[in-house]
Image (cartoon, rainbow, N blue to C red; front, top):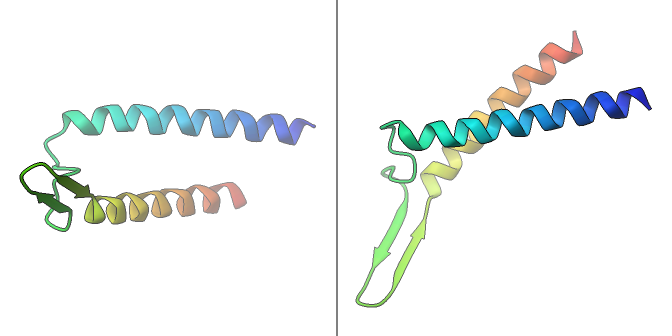
Length: 75
């Protein structure tokens, strides 16, 4: 049962850090959400936005962070 408690604390801390990172990223001039690969179509009364490049970048960063984290926890 103590392992479950440790994992819940770890997951909670991860979500707190991830939430704070999302709040901070909005204030940085990195252009998240407006990268060159993002699809943005605007017509008269229709707007379509799909952040393809932003999604790929976030996926890559999360994969890298989690792989490093799991590598450190394995030791």
